[in-house]
Image (cartoon, rainbow, N blue to C red; front, side, top):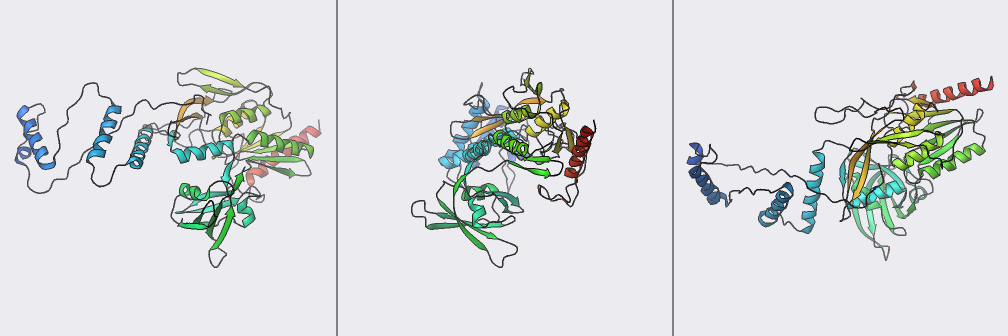
Length: 458
């Protein structure tokens, strides 16, 4: 994803397909039965059809306007809808919903899963995600069947201090008056989508929210009242994986605005502990900001290209390692990747592989070599559009192949590891503390121990 390079972009024009289906019961109209409107352009047939439609349904036959475009067609359709639709009032709120649905329909016709529309709430959430901070209770949530549950509370957050735990299912969310703090409304959340639940839980710092959860080990629902805070969730975790050999490990979960500075702090801490080799874990990292990928990639690559970007017009330009980025030296490096390592993760992994800077261990990556640009719109919504394509420093295209309808065939692209290792089925996804079943980590450590041994015998 790329931070918007142009401030505001207007939606120039879009097409909306409108269909009219009439279900007719009872006697067949004689003029239709005898095929009198089969030949378009016959004046008496058109007149008969017009009279019949007008009399039966009050429908005026359409008159094509030369030069009318799809934007005019949409405006006209919306005007007719407001004027004639009888089952619900098309007020300002409904008009906005219809327009958003039309934009979403337009973009979905592109068959590009990475291009989309963000309503104002989604756009705000996206900005908070890329900025790396928000106001709430500090709990990571995920869909769980038809419900929403806690993945984990962030250390030190209100959720952590209150006692929320992983696998708690959100049963209801209570809204409090922002002035008095009194509970004014409780909204059941079982069966609701994750976006709706997140909107209920998030709010200004200093305000209260009540969360009731179902916990497997508890006999009855548990209720917690929390005070929201400003949350800066860490996207980097680190520790010394092998104390004896001094092999450090850095897990990066996302490339947001704070990722590079958090990475640097982790690196410096491990260096102080005497780190001699590093496992850089990019598994389950979905990507993030292009700029951040270049910053972190530049730390590993002393000099040379990090990524090649191809614009819409076909012109390519090479983005080289930043001379301002502190370099990490030449210590042995193993990078863990899997099928959920995507986008910005693939930029960094691809640069490390092409420059021979480290060994990639695990499974092939997701296969997304596309850059999206965010275009804010005047009403607080935004477009997320695919605007360019990228290649690894060697010029390799990692994108998944496309089917006949221009949809990606997942599994046909990505970056191949230097050492392929299928993960054990006993390993729980993203449980980075499970050292027993994480066979990919074990292989990465074996690779680094061999390199350290070979270096010591020279």
